[in-house]
Length: 500
Image 1 (cartoon, rainbow, N blue to C red):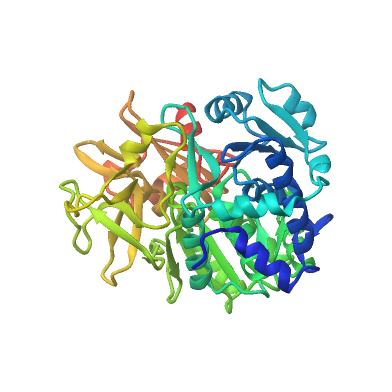
Image 2 (image 1 turned 90 degrees about the horizontal axis):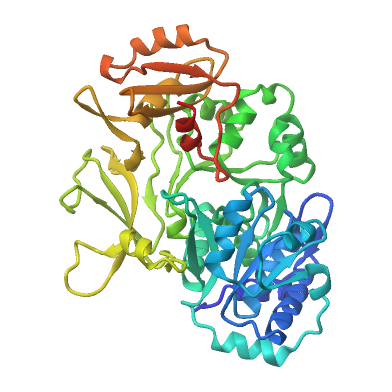
């Protein structure tokens, strides 16, 4: 039974030491190089007396940053990734929370790191990765490790404005990667195109699956996601055959007419996550790549990545909802109503998760942890935690789970309970719409719709009157050149609310 995530790397380096593991298209690391450099970093941390502690990694998006992750784990610690694009105030809150003794930087981030209010030691990756490896010390660390030991902390947004550090362990990551890869069919021939930032849990899909199978992963330069033709050309150049991207990255390609110039020739698996995929845009992808496998993924960071999947097996038309399907093996979804009872078919309830993929909770924040990691209300016989996602779902007549909306997106308007997500689905189904996001102006009791696309506000208003009841019609419609998105690819409704 596997209990340590580094067993993935150890097994692959025995089989394919000289195969490229991670690349950004310019610089690469083989499995042997990742293995050697990570063990050098683990030795450095051990020599420094840093053990079972958080280690901050502040590096540019590069294969070396991935090796740094493994190096921190190798030393018996857990990594805390931060990024130059994070606001200074957010970084300061993270550093105050974890109180790490060491921060690993690269030449491009060292100057910024030295300006931070960091009380620990700042070290350069390119220096510590040459530390002489002490096999006996690393072996002792490995043998003492438990599968419940943490391996990373990633910070998500908090409702109070204070970020929450989700802490995952060996057990949760192994459970997640093993069942994700089985469901999606990853193997040694998989060539990932990574889109997710390395300071978020979404990158686990590519990073850990790569070392599990001896596959390869390209860290696609962020700037290419603003240049769809060049993005697809990059994918073709490196024969990328598997992507697990946020919906906004996929719709950017299809909505801007990219397929008229170039198509991703090697893609065989297209997984999407973060928001509902507008069926109109989804069908554009299906028309261009009809033989590819399409998978809708769903899950919160607190559940170690995604926990549900739906492999598209039928046709959908605009206005339909693509299901999120069913949970991975060893995970159960509890759909609970307001009385903490299981929902029947078609009844809406909160999506709750139970299983080994649950993370340990929020680092140094027992109060917030206790709010959402709670005793399973269906089990009164022994302690058993579930995670309450705050997401609303329902089972359709096929028994498939459908995402309805965030509980936060439910409003009471004109005497009716309304899901703002339902309005967005109807807007996205219209021609000339690229993306849409709804918020509620409580002060004026108005539904406000923001959208991007070539359709003008007047035409959109007329179209919506034909699709929505009067009480669901937006009281204000605003066209934007581009909607704001969060770092994990979701429409940034907090920013939209500030624009009211």
